[in-house]
Image (tube, rainbow, N blue to C red; front, side):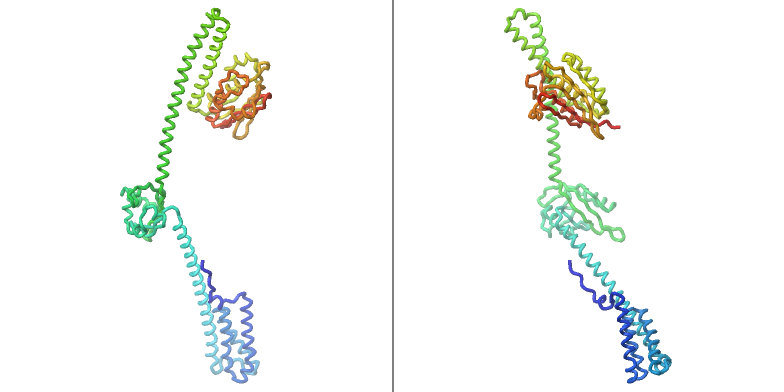
Length: 495
């Protein structure tokens, strides 16, 4: 930015502060008054013409009105001074040459004051012009910096299709030399001429376009997918004078988007095929397991007496293994259904879901003498009723299953609610789990009971999957020998 130069008019015509102008005016009058008497003794009455001196000074200090008033004041001062030297004061007006001299004093005061006012006005105009020129120059400098350093290609073109200005990014985009690019017809850069016609129609109608999609041809003949954002500059008759715009090359991002979409569709297809395969295999495997288990049960009931003690032991193992395998396959089928079934989020009463789950688990819980106690009120949550039922059933079953045989299972169910979420907790008196087991409690096929219970290692995985699909979170807090507290956090029911 260039330094501002000192204004010569303002330094010579405007004296600040105002008291300095008054001091100079009084000094000029005092000098004239003090010199009048000795000069009069030499020159006579004609010395009154020297009153032009304070008039000029006062007009220079105070402008047109100041000059006029200074002239009147000077005439009155001369009258007083003439009387002070013994001359009739009226001689300054009616004496020889008095009227002409007085008029000359008034005219000179007005003219000097007017010239001073005109000079100040011209000074203000010059200052305003210099400020405007400096502001315009600064604006042009900022525009040029933004124009040249922008990563997006920027151009200025005429309605006729000639590029009149372009930044380096535009030159790099099209691959032409700058001179070659300036000589090109813009229409030759469009793959489809209809795109150019639509672009011109839209920008002429609205004055601008934003992210207008086009395909542009670069020097090597390849095509680029681009988005143009531009505005039109109009003349006083609303005719387009030029276009100013930027071009964003989205070829690579569009190709990546299409590739990502294709890969996503392929992955979704593979997942669906895998889920269908898993479901089919699990269903067929369970069919054979049920058949095998049925025959093993018949063999045990009807023919165990014909087997020796070792044979009976082997047969019991076959029956037990078949049941465990059937439970495992059923859990796999449940996990598959949880992963695939459509969600129907709605307000669900936790107390109602707990009651239904206890009804389903009534037999196994009675066999173990389990007691379930609800602490406080259970609020409603926003969830899928079916998935939430599976979560509660699995957590209750888990709380009863992993309790030592010499201890009656006790489960405490409670809920904590804030403005947005509900945290449902299941506290048991089981064996508990260690810190390293907490980290893998929800992994598939992980069995945390050291004694080797009938668990399949899939139940907590089903819980986690169901809760995540409902947009919630699940976790566990536990210490070995002191029981565990499994918790589920879900969105509170919407009003």
